[in-house]
Length: 506
Image (cartoon, rainbow, N blue to C red; front, top):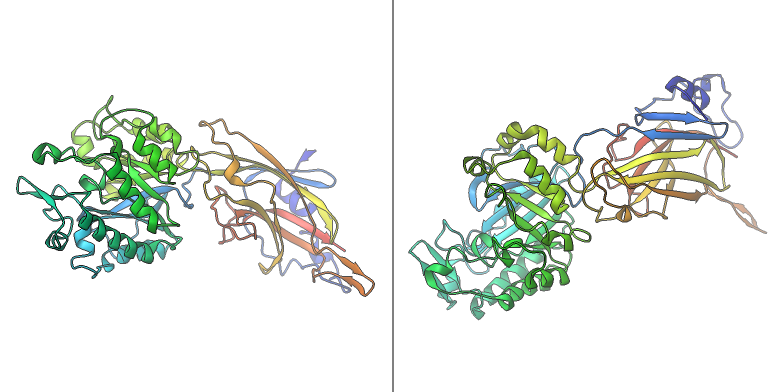
């Protein structure tokens, strides 16, 4: 096999001599050079033999926006002014690479100030800004805050729910009180009815237990002396699971104890058994060696569910001398994290940490890499041929949604001529690898373009003309719909990437 340059490649497809060809007058056509507008192609090393093209694509290093991964921006970080309040309504911080999700964390009292009367506008307004860009939204609704007396709406207590005053600054509910649980369930049911089947809602925190919804009462129990154990935490998990049937739910690692290191805990084992993942809200809250506690805990979760990380408010971490860029990157590796927070004014965080943010984007979540692809130069309609591929995952987490490689042929007008889905390899099954050491998985799948069906009544096949067509690669659903952004040039605007040409003959 010999290497050829781009010009030779185009010549070998017949593209540069297409103007000399007579249009096919029987069944189809061959496009003329005046009709053909060549798109940009995936960068890489192209080789050609007598019958075969092979491409080793060259991936770029830029951030990707894909399902179930990315940076989550705290538009509301409990307090409504943190950290989206300075953004214009049209500003979704698109310059922050890898920002996929807007995260809305607010007290329950703000969303249901009167029983059964909901202020969804508070959530829907920022959510729609990001969703309009094809991005995602996540939620947490909390019942106790350190800065707000009634984070649980006051009307809940007027209905008879028990609670405990903490130094006149916080009124904490009894998390096992039947009236409290009834009102929480009514709210969660209403919230799930609104958001559970929305594919752009990527996760919801189980937030009605503990300070800031983090599942601990370390700040309040010493004041009023009340504690709640495992069975009460399970009740809150079960309550959310009854109503959110489609959306990924998660609990804070602090349900197991905010500063207790360990691999397995009864409450997180229970969450895992219910399909509930974890988030660690304590990254770089304290300096090394107390920079985080629960990376071991994450090992149960990440092989099947996305793990979410949240670093300390950036400036607070800096002031405590806890901020460490290398450790921030290491948290992604240790937890096999799919999400990391933007827990500060977003452009301040970006400007101060751009280099490590770029490094994180090359590893966080999954990164689908086409290491090599080969295909025949010419195929006959109806006859079997194979396309051979080698794929790997350059990220720290699996591609949880799963997906299949697809090869799409297009004409000179961008019309779709043939859609060929490789059903043999699910990207969900690509192995996670350490940095710089991808685990490559090969696939070879047989295709037919416009196969014929012979019957005594005649021979039948769908209309398909001979000619030279552009070949695109994508990853998406089994029906050929592209879903995932790949790290290559040559995007057609629909997440298909032009790799070369193919000639179809009769």
